[in-house]
Length: 252
Length: 79
Image 1 (cartoon, chains in turn blue, red):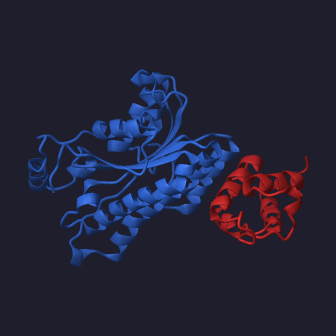
Image 2 (image 1 turned 90 degrees about the vertical axis):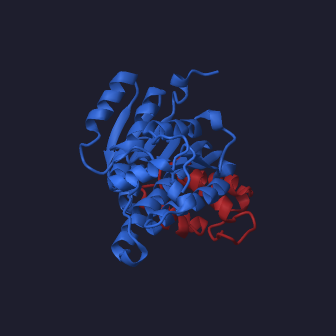
Image 3 (image 1 turned 120 degrees about the vertical axis):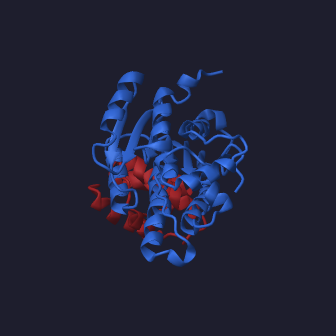
């Protein structure tokens, strides 16, 4: 059995939304497990320090890139650069996402567009080009970070739920289309995870959510990162088209 | 091998057809072998051989052997 610390040795991963929460934890865990990481953020400079630290601590290459994944041209330019530099991509973690709650009558066109542009369009753009690079090498793993809100729905979250449910449909279709190239596509549906996103809700709501979790604790970003590690590594080499809940048995 | 021959080899291996069957007017969907799945294999092989990352519009517009040459010229491949 391979040591956990070597699970991703020699593999190169692209991880979006690395500035905090699940993306940051995944980036740290992947570097610990020997992966070279291209960490994607949107705010220039925000990943410089952590990327340099992880590179040094784990003797891997963690390089930050800054662009908006919902911009098709930015995504295209990023991958064109990778091709020109003769880089390979083994893993894509589509984690970047935004959450803007609104009751049905309050949903504006702007909220709807922006949410779908980032959570769905951006993830598809990233997957579209990554899968083309993976097709050449006939191997790869793509993990889309969905949500328990996408699998179960929740009041006030029609927009977010729709976008995260869309990611599940995307995952299931892409897994069928790419299986022949030995590219696996899976999704993770995190429950209530301790991130900036979950801390942004009112305290009363936060506490109410905790009571919905049978394991009695909020999830940690590392809980999700560990699932992403499993789905990205060869431990899951025959698993594709699946949605794995990481929610401590949360009941919505 | 010049780029024309290289491209013919790619078409032949990706579509599973003989080199002699690759004419300038060979078109997408004109033969059963060139279906949408084979098209993806073809694009991956072209990208791999010429070090390109074809734009999505070019993937869609790559509808014949001639058109493939025209598109690749945009990426600096000489024929």
